[in-house]
Image (cartoon, rainbow, N blue to C red):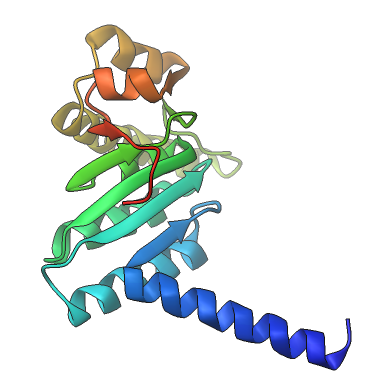
Length: 188
C-alpha cells in the first residue's frame, strides 16, 4: 500500500468514527476483557456527558469473556443517565449475553443468537487459592443468575440448563423469553 492509500484509509477510518460517535453507536464486537471494557465504558460515559437523554446504541457481536470486565460495562450502563439500547447482531454469548439484557430497550437481528452458561475458570494454583476462587465463582454466578431472573422470563428448566451446560436461543426464542424486546431488520 502506498503512502496516499494509507492517508485515504486513515481519513476513511476517522470519518466512520465521527459518524458512529454522532449517531451514538458503540460496537462490542470482540472478546470482553479489560481493554474492550475500558473502550466501551469510556464511550458510554463520553456520550452520556454530551447528552444525558438521547439513547446510546450498544451493538453486540461477541462470544463473551471476562465476567468482572463485563460487570464493569453493566455497572456503567446502570450508572449513566442516558438510556442504553442493546442490539444483538450475530451472537451475544456468555458475558456478552448478560450485557445484552441490560438495555433500556433490547433488540436482536433476525439471524442472531444468544447463549448463556455457567461461570468458568481455568484454575491451577495452590489448593487454598483454588478453594477461595471457587467460593468467589459460586458467589459471582449467583449475581449473574439474579440478573437473568430480574431481566428475562427464562424458565426454571432453562436456568438449570444454563447451570449444567449452555442455553442457545434464536431471535424468536429470545423475544419469547424476554431477553430482547423486538426483532429488527432495519437501522434504528
